Amino acid sequence: MTKALIIITGASSGIGAATARLLSSQGHPLLLLARRLDRLQALNLPNTLCKAVDITDRAALLAAVQEAETQFGPADGIINNAGMMLLGEMSKQNPAEWDSMFDINVKGLLNGIHAVLAGMVARKHGTIINISSIAGRKTFPSHVAYCGSKFAVHAISENLREEVAGSDVRVITIAPGAVETELLSHTTDEAIKAGYEEWKDGMGGVLAATDIAQAISYAYHQPQNVCVREIVLAATRQP
Ligand code: NDP
Image (tube, rainbow, N blue to C red; front, side):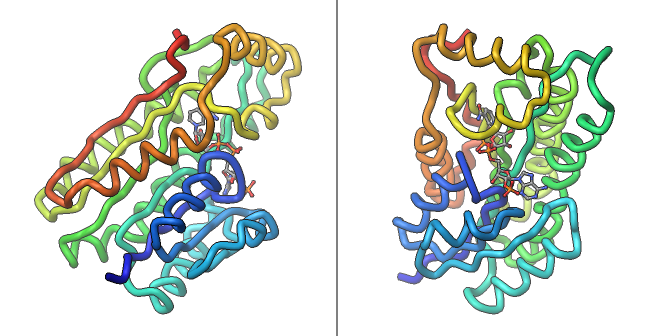
């Protein structure tokens, strides 16, 4: 049977790239989005459209979805995964950093939902998977703006789930603990960055991006009448 199109934002590295590899190996056509097109193309996956899209650009995101749907048929899933973590203490942090996090982690995620939701509701079929964080459930030092953006992802997901449940559209939140990816590299405060690395080492290892990909695949591949509302997963020793 032909598998349905799934869209993954932020597929050029980390969790998004691992999820793209896994879902592709399971036979899904994919639309992969990120700003670094070369990194999407380097995944070299079959039945895959790669587009350089900044998810804060609502029109570009929508156009890419429409192009993929023309090629592969209606999108049955979207993994709203693209995100940015810029840790900082509020008294010192450049406001441009929380602007970026809210633009990408919150408004970009809403753009992803917007690009597919009307079609899913009309077809009464589809799955929206939002990648939040354990930092969307509890707070950590130097995480004020990042936690704010991820608590928002939980609220958006839960409220959207209630809104579209009657249309048989599933909304799922995946909330990982620390995962080894490029996420920390964008933090500009070197002392906070070093402290976070030490904290991760102290746990004797963090999760791999493939661990999160497995959780995403598990949730997506449940029967359509089963909605795994939320998965929180972290390294066993993570506090
Ligand atoms: P990476 O930094 O490895 O990946 C982030 C991805 O997001 C990249 O593909 C990047 O692509 C993309 N991205 C960032 N900004 C934009 C944008 N404006 N438009 C389009 N794509 C964008 O980190 P992770 O894989 O760890 O992060 C994936 C998600 O997982 C994030 O939402 C993150 O908050 C969440 N998460 C991660 C955890 C961790 O410990 N790693 C823990 C909990 C949650 P490009 O730069 O090419 O645009």
